[in-house]
Image 1: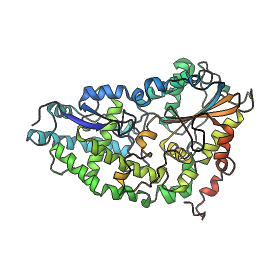
Image 2 (image 1 turned 45 degrees about the horizontal axis):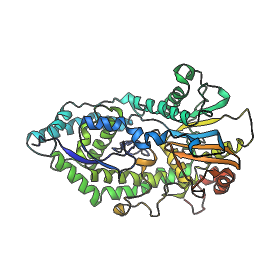
Image 3 (image 1 turned 30 degrees about the vertical axis):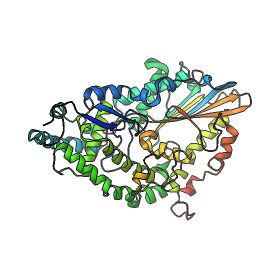
Length: 471
């Protein structure tokens, strides 16, 4: 038995995100606090350190000072006049199948871990075993995919930070003509929207906010739900998961499984599915409980985490990213909506146009929109056999698509014309083709995304009989 204070090297980056209907409906990983998975820190893996890290999750990811840096520190002669935001809902609870497994399978695994420790097997510490002994499932089926309390706080805080940055756009006093808020037909996005307005206007005034009726197949917020070609040829196509399947049956994943079984003293009884369940449980429980964290995190080393992260990235790359052209091409309705809104802002004092448009959507929309913009694209294709070549890849969903992730376009009225500042994850970014050292002229954006703006034929892109060679 090991009774010392254990130390593990773990990757703690910030990640809470869902998969595309995978079997246990993964929607977050251990990547919780630091900016990237390569930002490694050595810590004693116990509840105190988990608490300290996760309390700082937003501040550490964005940088407390830089995240609240106001536009006027670096942009002279310009005035922000309007903003278009796409926000992924806040931290939520798992889906039905994951909850069932957490409640039925994990208690049995826990008993095996405790028994192995008592037999002198494994390398867990006494404190970690005590944590397992006191553990019990924290969610029930009625909670499935609902916004968690942590997600409520995320939305309030996010709204407050945008209000600090752009107080003349996100005014404290609610006027219906000044804002457009819209969410999809789901509890997690509707509640995210409501808590966002609490952050802007306070609890009392937020009750007066008007929201349009939510649509199950919203053409802007959930455009992919209406794309039959993508749904059949990509989303429901087993071939889209072939790279992940091969990786999960490859040497890196097998080595991780052996290592985890050895650490827990279980002599190989845990297969990949069981370990994956432990992986997402650690992630969710640490996100929900910033004081106590989760005992399941003790099973993983730094290298284990990187392997599981790459497995996730493979799926999202091929289903929601650059794997197939249709996936990012079909996001043109969302980009067109943004561009038309910013172009409308070129008409001064147009009363019917709100100062801010804020959409609350899902991972599927966010990843496809990022791909459509040409962001986070690697020179190499993500494959099952180039894991070691892709360690520094741009496409890391731990960085680009967490719970509460956001994409913002802010229109500035400048002396030399209208320009746009783009934010992703509350950091300014440069879109491909835009100036590296200045705001991007709106006219430049029109040229870069000309086809999306003027030739967005969604019906043709998504028609099953299309044979344009760009699937």
